[in-house]
Length: 107
Length: 116
Image 1: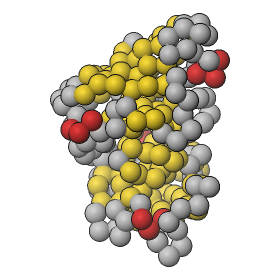
Image 2: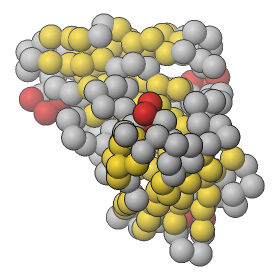
Image 3: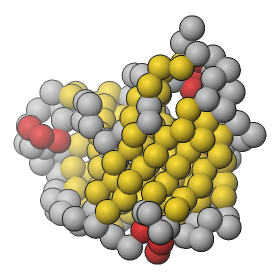
Image 4: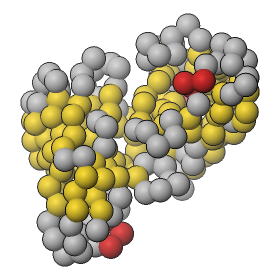
């Protein structure tokens, strides 16, 4: 099983700042099968990024993903008030599919 | 538009059973793998099972293997999760999701509480 470790656990930033979230895998994620999700309280997760760097439909271009192998990054270029939420990475290169423990982006 | 609606959650005693349903609409259900993912209160996400388009390929996480059964009815656009021998640690919101490797669409979730 691939274990995903996200850092930091909490990121305290202000609107307009840049957020950089990290996701490290315990072994290489094949074919960059890495996704990122955003979750707000009381809501289901929302897919932001798949294939490590492809934005899902309707996702603003301030969200970008990068990385390969064992190290992946989600960058939010300029935080908007609605971006303060929990973010999870997920690998789907091998079964079982696994999620990171999450990074909270707070004001 | 794609819609996934879960139902069937509730309060059940340890050792009991529950069957969750997920009604799909807005896409060709039979063309997609489907998954169940759960989230314990205040915790992260745990993928627990997927089923292929025809139902011939199924995978379970170790935490539910032998206790949970996933199935689908493509004629009715329904996904199911039969949960037996429920434990306190199975308490969670259960989501169904359209599975393209990543999970592009999610339902709103249904809460399962296992408590005596």
